[in-house]
Length: 339
Image 1 (cartoon, rainbow, N blue to C red):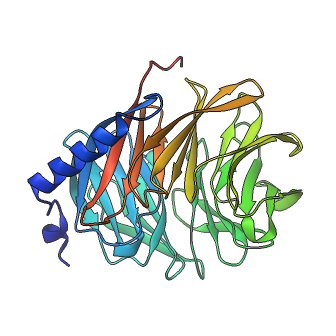
Image 2: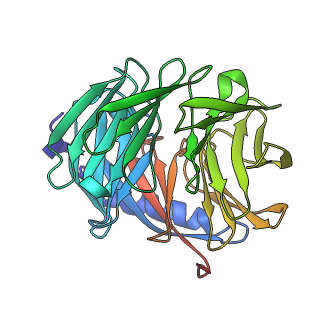
């Protein structure tokens, strides 16, 4: 379909009704830790939506529309789609590198990592990794990009050129992974092996393997202040908290089902877990104590999300279901951040 026809083809009446329905449902949440602030239509987007990234300077959100083979680019001030990158092959991971104004897109279908200029979104390069290119992370300095792919590897790329510097081998396909911002460690969820792999990005070697008792460790976040690794399991649905030092279990508690993203709100000491069952679970962190304080309704299948501390908003991607068009739900936390 033409990208020009694809942008903003949503009935105003349908969008208004959907917004009111979600807003009314959200008003009965317990308690309102997140307020639905806006609902941004994505147009004719079919199928699964995967991960997101943000260009803070331009205030634009990048949405990996996996089932549509597109990346939608949303103007967060105008609340509308302003551009669509098409011709992709099951885009999963997206990352924006501010240091060179480049958008990276990882494609599961053909294993490629494609780069696009941040100004006009013209293609700037392509790297073929082999198969199932997935999650992307950028280091704190914006100098390196890491991409999980294949039957077990993290590709280490030069952020400026997009060239592959090296591979860090793993025992099976990596799902979510996080870079230690103050060191060289990378924590990697490897669900097929039921483990968290700890690797050193300087040596390119795995240094530890933390065995997991539960199945489906997909989402992950780091709590640097608390020295914790936060992992969400799918079977049974649970939040697992582990010591960043040695993988010792701190706590484990139930959470919502079919989760695909988890984020730590550092300023409020809260955890947000977005789940395909149509809710965001909110946990309060009080030292070593974790308590679920709210379950906020979203939409069926809304598994992926992005919390942006600089904007103080949680963005949840809602796929098209039951006659409702795909959209981005924008949630505002209910109290000021302490940081």
